[in-house]
Length: 275
Picture (cartoon, rainbow, N blue to C red):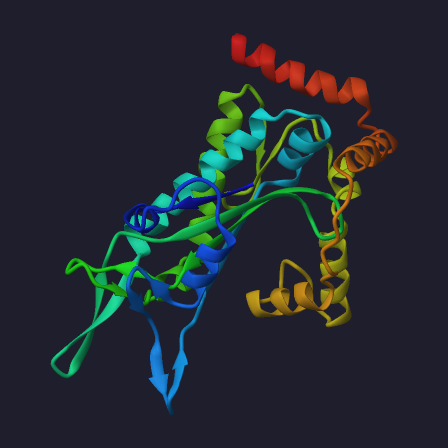
């Protein structure tokens, strides 16, 4: 599933599913009737954009994709929208040259192409959305300019925290109890660490790669984690959804989270909501 998001997208008349040709033009810096970018030595240079990926806690993915509670997918989508609205309101800006100075000017609009996925590269359940923030924003004078992304880089943790706090609120509203972890991290009560570990192939791969470098997920820098993630990343493959769910349910059962356990965790959330 894909969709356009942001006030900038509305300005351009973009809605519904992301069209391949439209997004390609925007990635190339062709916005409205303008060509964004800088010409150096006769060659146009334009950075296409940035991918802000927002990923649900593992227990949420398991209850959504393995136990089949599709309400959690809607909750994830709503939390993504809230996080992007925060980015748009507080971080969207451009650079404007005035005289000999270059000043940062807030714009309050973004063009975002969002793509939702339900699996990790290792084919584990992993509900996440890639939000491709296009390198374009509209200034007060009506001119489209390149985005100044410094705040988005600097406030990555804040973006993730806004997403998780909103998701936690919605998960509670659905009746689930949650266990709060470090910072804004949380998991759904009733999904054991053993079950989550059984569906955390990518995390195990990255942890092993960090271990080979003499560090760990807790101690490594963001750059070290990124290198480990890239070094262990497999090519994306397509899989039959029905077969995947069947495999996931077998894995869950083997980890002690069988059909009755999955059902009771869902039922407990429904009862909690009603009470």
